[in-house]
Amino acid sequence: MRLLLAAFLGGIVLFLWSFLANAVLPLGDMGHRYPASEDAVLTALQANMSQAGVYIVPGLTPEQYADPAAGEAYAAKAVASPFAFVIYQPTGENGLDMLDELAIQLAGTVLASWLLAWVLSLAPWSFGKRVAVSTGLGLFAWISVSLPWWNWYRFPTEFILGSLVQQVAGWFLAGIAIAWVLGRRVRRTY
Image (tube, rainbow, N blue to C red):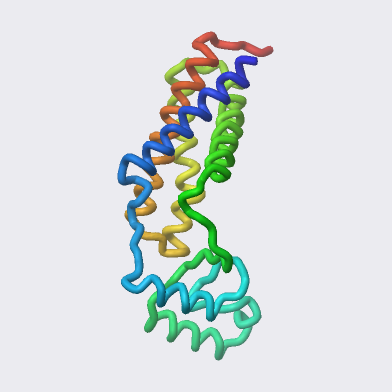
């Protein structure tokens, strides 16, 4: 029961921190830019992308990897052209109607907090060590997910640094809540 309470409280804290970081603080908008002519970009996307997916432009398809001529043409084009990483959905959606997304986010933060609470309950750690481990795992999440986005897909440095603050601070705060519920009692298993 204590584990479920820790997970729920940690998830709520992380959810509220995410709301604060994205809706109140500038962390959620770091690195975001908007095109000068949005309608022209939307028209070009609709004309050239038929399926939902991730598009990398310029790109090299898996079939072209083995073709040296295609590789050389891609390399020349990649050096001379801008780069875009586009997550595309051919059908629109009201971006201000976030009820479903908020519910999924809350469920995700509670689930992630449950996993963290379970890990933190396995070792006979003090309150401070549990918070330190939680914070370290926030850094681990950032290194394993966001850093590759910056490295391979050229996500803006500002965006990646905003993500760093969100992850580390969020798991620090959730770690405090989880460690508080789990208590300072050291559990010994033999």
